[in-house]
Image (cartoon, rainbow, N blue to C red; front, top):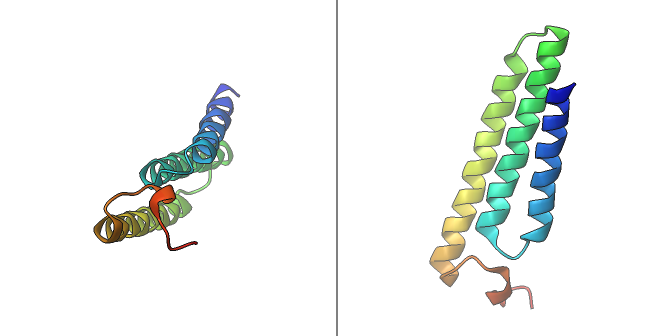
Length: 94
């Protein structure tokens, strides 16, 4: 029961940081990776509890790595185009 509470605390702290740091893209990407890590931990707990196989964990880990690489490539392209990763300095949306 205590391990489930760690999972919920990790997930909600990640969501809270994602909501509070919405002006800095790198911190948003880091908080998204923390959320994915907490979800991975939650899937591990569920699969251990019900004694399932861990094949889905490898698929989830592969998809989360692809998500992280896509976010970093967007970050690199934005830094090369604009020079920083703050959302307030972009004039594209206006």
